[in-house]
Image (cartoon, rainbow, N blue to C red):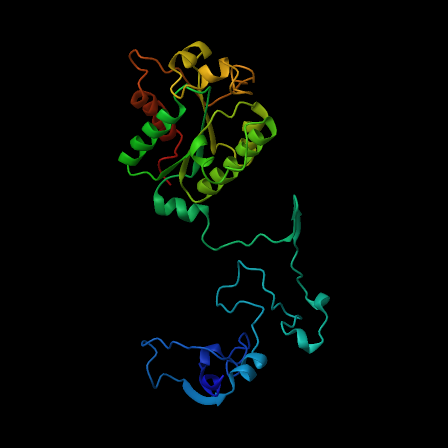
Length: 307
């Protein structure tokens, strides 16, 4: 403990911070970096002294509010009539504008914090509109192939995209979920929430997964503003998907080695009102690139490719 005998501290006093919003820094122990732009002789003073480290830590206080010259979009804890210092015997409910928390699911007493940079600002930066393209269909219908072709086509146009592939997400975020009906619903819910965040970031998010149940897809649609969820149905008959069987899963399902496989012993509920219906085939107009162009044309006509 000999090395902790004495430590120096530096406190800084700036006129522009003497507005009553700051607590004094003299009781703080730590490091202070003074920007070179301030320079000596700009109306501030530097004082140094010595204080035992343990004493300094005991006497220091962490402010319970944010110091900023732009507090319009924040719920301030230092409201008129409030005292941020718990030792000053001011009742908590003496604030004129009490922060209102909420309960969501199993999360209690939570508060949504807004930021001054919003979706419209991010869209202006990216020169596109954030949205979710939700590609649904049977296994083997070409969902992932279309998603990659669509991503390439938009990237070539200078648009920012991200693909949420059903299998890829199960490698990480959803690796704790099985293929039982309740877990499939949770898998879709989680991907829907992540896709919503991407859209809010101004990104064109491409989600491609079987998502066999209508109610789960509709729940994801309801997460987003109207028009921001674009459902793309890969309308490929079961017999064609089974003939392709790129992963060999249909063969395993027919042999009884996979239970609850969509199209074999678990239902697929086709969309009733998809924005786009595609029928991939090996003939003219059915290649992944050509199908991707159909989706891109839809995005362009509906204003998604500009801010």
